[in-house]
Length: 417
Image (cartoon, rainbow, N blue to C red; front, side, top):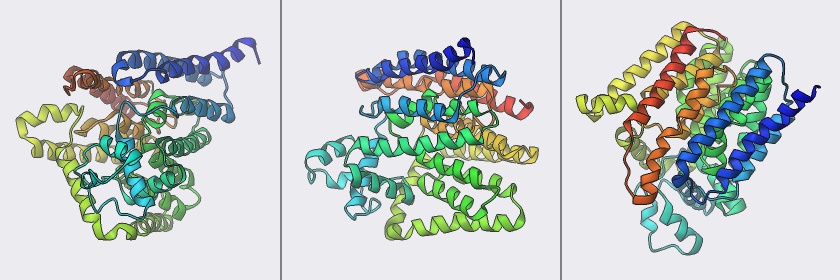
């Protein structure tokens, strides 16, 4: 091994880690968003250089190296509280409810105001939309409950998601055509910050999506059970179901679908009596929530809220049909379908893009890497919100995110790499 290659293998991860250390030292990332944008841009450039050199055969990372650095980056943020998002407090509230034998779908957190003390009172004061019952599906509730029973802390919930995310990194390193491309997820600031800093649920869901892909060719039933588990953690992977089914032989298709149904059915009974409340919250989310949706912002003044959402839904179906007809390899189709969802959704929080980023190592596109950074731009809304309590989105930033996503989609549809 030459000295130059050894230097790159060391300095690349160290440059990335220095950015994470600086961000972890910020007391509140909401007021440090400009710095976050600049540092993550630099980290993305470093990742691009490392993968480019690996593609040329000039640089190699072993699987243990990839996973070890991924763990280091995430552990940097483990002790800190979430500042870019407050979803973690809802997870903790739901987890405490489940661990005590309660049903989080029965009553909204606001019903317990004045009836809690100490740690739970602090958590309740930070739960978002406390007047609504939880929007998270049954298997997510089991995960919240287990992590809360073991740790009784926000750090414990984040720690569980970090472990699950590292398993995803390991499988990506095994699945990626170019092993080093796994760092496009494992070391990427979007994955690190949204998992280890904000403690979002998505890494748990993505683990089972990638596990379904990992098991697809040999174990149809287990692959289906894995995808079913991802759906019962967060519903979005339902959009991937037709693509998985298409890539299987007839007998395996039946086993796969049986696996999906089995996991879903087994997850539901403990909460069955009050799932209607969950569906009601889900309906409110589907019809009222909005953030950083470029096409929705254009259509809503013209067509109204509900018609705009309907047209965007039809647009997504059209893009999905286009991907279906193109008959790409499964990894590429999953990559494109996740981008199609991002293009049309009225609600695009940065962590939603993790459903795209996880496929980037399997289909590494330069424009995809640009979009994975650009999705941080809407966080600028948090500056005024953190300082003045004013929530005002910047349409220009929203349009930039859309343009990068649309460019990545167009490139993915039109050329092979």
